[in-house]
Image 1 (spheres, one colour):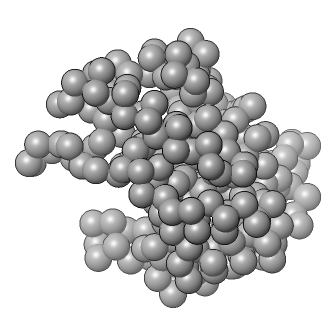
Image 2 (cartoon, helix red, strand yellow):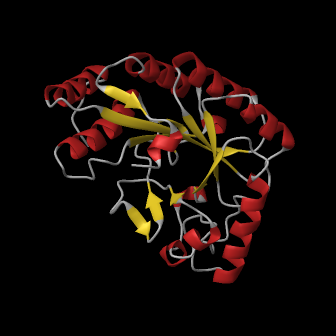
Length: 254
């Protein structure tokens, strides 16, 4: 992890982009939307206040009509498909997953197709699969374009622009939640460090420079410190000439 001292270190990294005449592209994805809730309302209010586009990953089997109406009222919001019903099918002792090799391939593909049908009720959606827990059997990736998916999004620097022929991959890289430490905010230094690490790797060509640095949030698990961090991040970056927060459509053209 990069040695950092808070926001000053992020400013220093962005200065390095400025000196190269480059713009640091960022994007924002939020997972697990099912229905309108006060945290989701707060999230969309933040997006509106700072004019930050957001990709909301909605769970098709559980998404309510109220969610469809609510998200349809927010022009900065684009909806992505978050698996099917966010169910863990992993055997005991294995990491949680909805789409891994412990299920029949045809069953998983049929389920994803059913999920696509349920996504049509959203006013603004892209055919992008966000696998729950950011895990998917790589053997399924070749089948996704045939189902109509245009892209997939998980976590961590991508290995290639295409996860499979006809299927782009654009991942997230910054997770503010310490999932194994009480599901609390991971801390300003640690989260800024994640962002700097990916930005620096792109700038130095140690990672795909064209993949925008992705912020991953979970509105239902965000604690007060996490909300404060998000507001500070958006306040510092939304008008910075060295930064561009991409629309979700732009993100999946990268």
